[in-house]
Length: 421
Image (cartoon, rainbow, N blue to C red; front, side):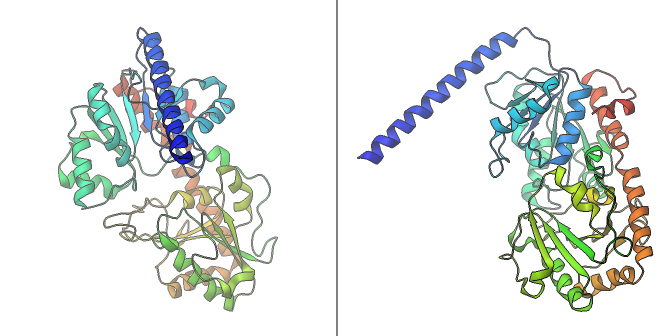
């Protein structure tokens, strides 16, 4: 009886909340009915979550460049971290100049804009009917992940639906393999594809907070790290199992080796008893954690592989975690099973491309452990290469020009503007 009463009260409270919310949105729509159209509407499922560093860097650049731009987010990807209202309040406190321009998406909220922008296939497909109902032309970035899988019927169906929409204008791709895939499928014209290698990274927030601590220079330990999110048991797609196997092998031969794991991993994922006193689990961390952390790291290891998480699933190259580590001066040792490097980094000089077996990985690492000066040179030259490729201006300028040209603002020089974000 008590449970039924509690359920009834809860149901009535929820219904009252929905009615109040609809009334509020109705009044808001009435107030903004005669306002001009926003020059850019960003539709998302995660922003403004600080754990999505690339979104923070990319979307805030758009808010800076487009005076009336707005972000409408469902917050559906936030549940395990924080609520959307909390994230929005935190964002507006940190950026009062953009107060009111980040909102929770609601299907009844008036969306009046000249152009919409989205990231990932899952978001483009989720919002496609809204875009068509509101007659909103759109651009989206087809990053790896987000349910974009090569030669997968379900993924292909969603992608074809999005690209065949009368509102579709352009797709930005960040990997050559994605561009080739779209051209092979023939779902859009070549001039509807903009290839921009890489990802937008908050390089300004990754500046070192102190002098680097490097093996053979000012510390005796060699510190290797694994940084990734966990999308499947044991993190096999990201190569966490290979990292632990490699760590166990190295620890037996190199007593100075120490290992670090950042992400939602702990001792329960894979047995680490052999290295229990030499591995540290740091948990999931925001961007602000990494400058000091990476200042003490010598190598980041990423033995990730495609087509493990799901058929056709693959990561961008290098992974976002490797990019941030490289920008901070950590030597990057990573896999490139799909040959996505495309000549951007010199193997053995700016980055080390590794096999996926622990023996091969150990061999690659030990060549540098025997020569700390060579390892330091690799890290230094790698940092310069990452700074060149992931420079904020270089990453944002082509993206901004695409959106400016399609929103009616015209493609103008935007390099200096990026520096103010």
